[in-house]
Length: 114
Image (cartoon, rainbow, N blue to C red; front, side, top):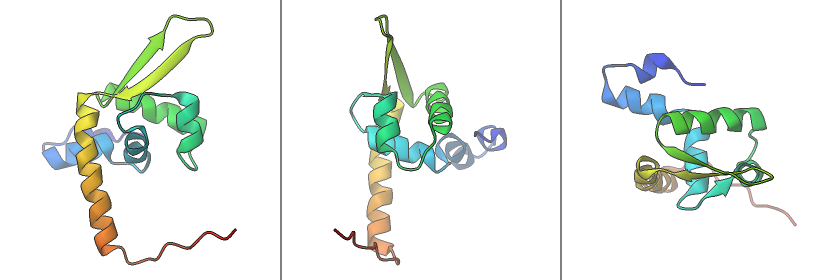
């Protein structure tokens, strides 16, 4: 859910956090990368997100110009999502965040057992 107090702030950093600042949006953007994806694919790949929240987040990402929704006039209807130019420009920032986390991460990742 978007917080309009952040999005309407005078501070550019606060506005940026209002656009991408919840836990799901950066994950969705990272999962999509440079490919187009359908809702079902995103639902299967993004961990622990409900379909309702995924729908809301996709709508907000589209409203904020980070995502493009492509609806094809077919039967059955087909919709694909892809990052816009603005969304693609955010990918290197996510890479820097991942690098920062790897460098300073304190907690160890538990190993999966077979």
